[in-house]
Amino acid sequence: MKKAHLPTKCCPVCQRPFIWRKKWEKHWDEVKYCSERCRRNRHHGISLPS
Image (cartoon, rainbow, N blue to C red; front, side, top):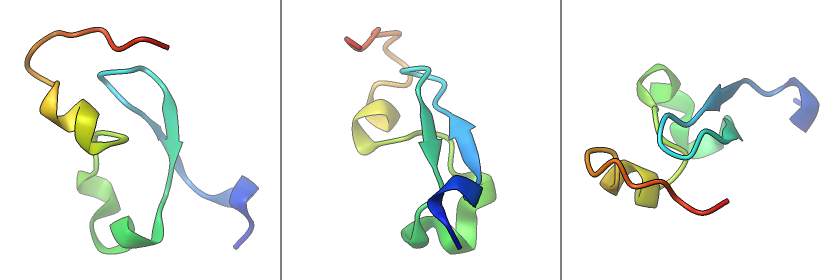
């Protein structure tokens, strides 16, 4: 599959789009955050620098 055809989501913390990764293959529907950093900061309301 070409990179342009991979599914994308928008991270609710940093508001950046991120694409599907092989390691998320079995649970893509449950993935909400683009990175571990965003997952850790989800409750703090911290706005990450762009």
